[in-house]
Amino acid sequence: HRGRLTPHDLSAMFKGVHFWNSDGERYGSSGDKFHPIDTFPECYSRKFPDLVLTYPWKDFDLRRHLPEFLSWIEQELGENPDRTFFLDILINDQNSPNIKEDLQIADFFYMWADTHVALMTNCVMTRAWCAHEVATRMRNIMKLHG
Picture: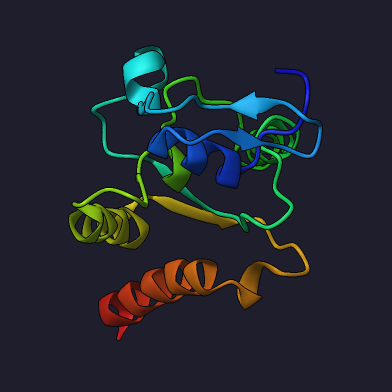
C-alpha cells in the first residue's frame, strides 16, 4: 500500500468492509474480517505494555505519523528493543461484540503502564477517546499520590 492508512481504514478492515482511502486504494474485502494479530503475530507480545500511546484518529496516518511518533519517543526515552507499546487500533476492534471488555483492558493499560505518551496535536484533547485515556491515567496517578 502506497497511500495513507488511517485508523478508520484499519477499522473498516476489521469489519471486512470495502473502504477506499483518499488515494483511491481499497482496504479490506467483502466479508473478509481479520485482526492484525492474526496477520502479524510477530508485532504482538504477551508482555504487559511499557508504554501506552494517545493519539487522535483524525488526520493520523499510521504509515507516516506512527513511525515519526515512535522515533521521537525513542529519542526522548532512549532506545530499548524490549520496550512494548500499546496502540489501541491494533488491539481493540471497535466493532467487536466484546468491546466493553476490550475497553476495560485498555483502561487498565492506560492506568498502569510505566509511561503514557500523548501526541499533542491541535485536536487531541478535543477527541473524546483521547481525553478519556488521559483522564484515566491522571485519575489513577491522583489516587496513588493522594
